[in-house]
Length: 496
Image 1 (tube, rainbow, N blue to C red):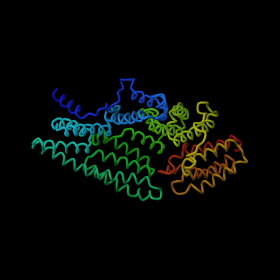
Image 2 (tube, rainbow, N blue to C red):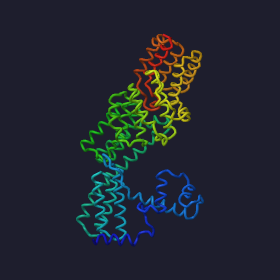
Image 3 (tube, helix red, strand yellow):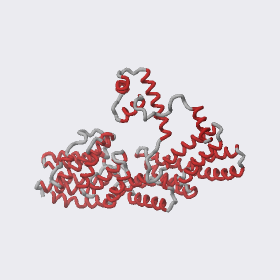
Image 4 (tube, one colour):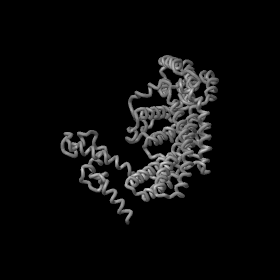
């Protein structure tokens, strides 16, 4: 009880005159009403808020004072959040909790309550040790050492100083690891012409981070290296190796060589499904997608991102009924509208491709996906070596399906100009080969002749792996499948 009395005295002496938090029990307060107006998206301007709360749109001094006080209380609430539990207690949550404990300890130290501060710091140490947060351990141990020195506890002070010295050594490795992590990851953001130089430095950086991990046993360093390794392998188009790298990480976690708090299950689940899509392991990818979609809260940005890969897996595996169900799940309702304009346009492009496929495979357009998500695509057409290619291909295929013979030469010229202008270099090999096949179909206008003359190109296409970066988002439908649809369209029009 004496401990509580001392805490009450500290708070009573130092607390601000106004309540630091919003009172959610009193529905009559303006703060409560403002909170729920914003929560329910009932207002979209200061004037609208003032009208509801004060009966006038005039922004009076009282309203400005309420808004300022309300903002400060919202920030105060950030110290008392209770994050939802997860399968793994994440490193960020532990850091949040420990920093709060360190703040409590600092307040007690300022108030000369050394023994109470020591209790709080020991709590932080337990969490930081369990979840391997070396930075928190350093901060806590420095404060603990100072307290033990002031309390003349020499034996405890010597013990804690040894612990602190060991943490300093880990800290040196972590600082170097973080510097390498930021340097290499930031290097991938540069323009394409400079990226080649950055990628050449990656193997040495990854090797150095592996050494740092082996010496320090820091899971934080391992986590940073894992992120860099995945990024590097993606750039190289080594998607099978991405899957292997994730499997290695999971094994080390199970062997308890890496702390689970630094194992980002959602990140690995997301990347693994994407890598399986890119390495054409569709069956396994669909199994994992069905299993891991549960990790993502529905209609969040990460859920929509994961669903993109899920839908593409279904389309690539030609499981069109599954693809339709997944697309309907995404498109129905207003949740899609909260995404960026570029994301919304991508979903519209996926929908258009699926509608085209459905008409070719099933022979009908179903009502569920017949309505446009957005009428105009304004952003994707500017991605000349990316999604604009997918738009061009779909447009040409739709023209081909209409059977307008007089228009085919115009489409052939579009294909020629686009190929010459944008599809250059090794990374553009797959789209370049497909465009040559498409050109055959447009100029020969005969399915049998196009198939025979395109066989060599098709074999080259089948043997060409997906590129590592520039065109990874283009093949909404594998080019090999699209070629079969092209030949089918020629046959349907009697051009055998």
